[in-house]
Image (cartoon, rainbow, N blue to C red; front, side):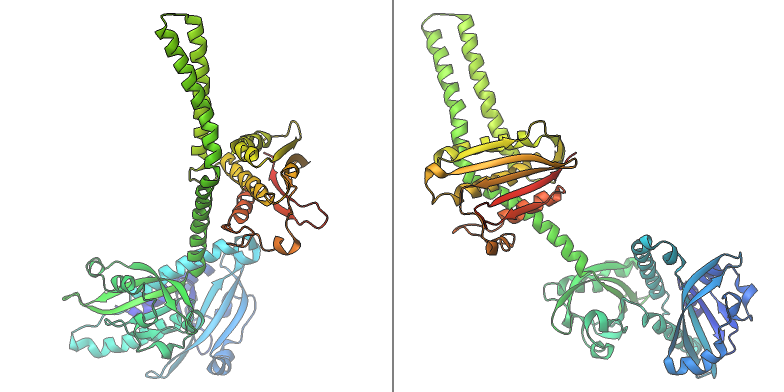
Length: 525
């Protein structure tokens, strides 16, 4: 089997081999797909057949490539059917000292779509990356195995050297780290992209153990992926995500595709081939998202201690009424009097009080329920009134007066009712805490609602406390910063996150002229 030719045909991009006169010696299937010509139609002809102008390839091969190593150009081409396109072309010198031949490898990357549809650039890049990794996996699978047949060993070794030359040519132009690892975990080969991704030169890694540069918590996981006996039997590839240390000491997350090359008879590992890419941004974004959700849930739970007394007071009132109504009915029945209308009226009152207690408990359950953002059409004025009623006991015990200045007939908004209650409860509790040191008769909170325009409603909360200074306003959204002695420093940051998740804006006006307030906006449904 001609492994070099198979490797050449497996290249996903158009690849053409030229002789020193610029004539086509070989032409892979991708070139046929790109230009529309079959290999039989172009062999022996000038490569300028497909370009919109003549390039001096004999001169480039003779005078440019030996000194500059690579020739790069953006070329305009015409397909066989006459359609026009653009590609990024690179030429690399190929030499075969044994045969004394010189040739050039042309790689064409079709960028026509990039010129026409810039908005699809990201999706196209991801697609090309996936195709590239698949191509690398295919190339690794085609890597020639050593044969024990001494009769053909010399010829196979020559083929192997030529295949390795082409493999290195591809690997050294890849953005991922292509590596060959021995059975004991030491690097045999590392592509030049390790300079960019790890900060090391290839020669600094070759001969060293791969585990030396792996985070100690991930070494076991990486060893399991590299030496897993199950993959030896199934011959399947496996993928592992772990942390590797850059030269300056920073750890980065990598995703590595692992292929084991095993002895056919003993199934012992002869070599491990890997392709690795940096996925740090993706991993960190996922972890940050999970952390935000956890913090929001912790914040809801931490509010329980501050609401416990108010909720107990609110539940105890209907329960006491139910007890009184029920005892009255029992005494009435024990007296031998059976006034059915009176008993019915009393029991209906007891049912009303039981339903009231049930509503209070349901609101508490809904508030502390962990979940995703669930938007429903609702009226902001109703949400605010219900939130005020949740901690009315706190207002009473602290002698705080609440003024509601609601605009009538506000349009519906699309929002998560429970999460908006969470925001308002935090703001109201902060206002109560901020006014603890002022005269009880002067403790006032004002809540206003108004339409800013046809698309937005605004909710403004201000109190008679000292407000925020200009210096503090710039710090309150930082995690764990708090102006309270025992504050958690998460409340306002989470409030802002909730409002922004609804498509609104959260604003704090500092107390520069005795007019400090907090306002958030929400989009109208």
